[in-house]
Amino acid sequence: MIDETAYPEFVLTALKKKAETPEVLEDLLYQWDERCGMRHYEGGMPMKEAEKAALKEVLERLNTIG
Image (spheres, rainbow, N blue to C red):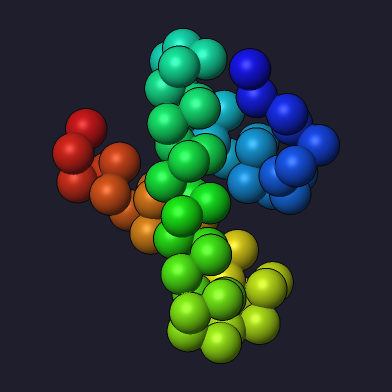
């Protein structure tokens, strides 16, 4: 079950457009969360920048795979 309140609205909106099922959305959110955390907590990037960069990476990966 996805707690939508845990994610920024712009992330949910973008990833919902790409997800075909709730399971795919959950996986995409997991990928985003992992990449965002690495950028922010491990890399020292400000949270807003990390959120945007992580979303961009996940979307770019989807475009190269799909």
